[in-house]
Image (cartoon, rainbow over all chains, first blue to last red; front, side):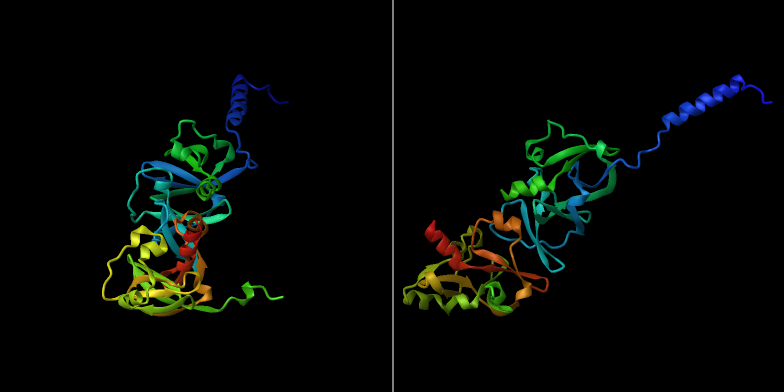
Length: 172
Length: 139
């Protein structure tokens, strides 16, 4: 015959239940999105992973005269000729020189492919889609047209750029 | 039925020259001849400088001893374009010739640059003077 649970037993059992209620197990079925986080000047931006084909070191970009100033030129990627855009200028930001950390993000959007020069690639991570919230209404006008959402990371708020919107606008 | 694209040649001969530090190529089959400037003037050709021919103001270069006039064929047959130092004939493999990337095609200010030929690490911009001049004439 077992003893009736003591008061301490009850306390322990209750706390065990409430503790496990707080330690919710992550819902593995929650959809996630891969983001490629890049730096432009003081700001952080991200591209949806599904829109990024590859990330390249900055190689020599060949100038093509007669193009808008945000078109940096063309590069040869394994036999394919691709454009490279200066993302600072596309977003109306102060231009920045090419450094050892600079990268060319080759992205897909609006049915086309192009490279985008950024100051650095900071991270590639998976975030729950529920963490991507609508963009702030006070974004600068030059950026607002291309942002589909924002996410808060430890290092700060990150605007998620949509290449369908960005390339689509440049093509129009 | 053989389509027009099936009949595209395996290579194309280009006349290369440099302007503004950029390498250009003109399809040889579209050139009627190459003259010195005095010869072209003597023939009464309508002579354009490169910026006018390409509709690109940034490529102005001074006329010098190495300047030549390439005489165009086709709808602008009495027109010559001054280029500095045409210096090489190059046979470009069709596999190395590409149109301009979509974003450039959509935004470039001139119809005169049709595409790009790759030669090793070098890019050669393919210039089509006839297209630029005939487009301008129709505009």
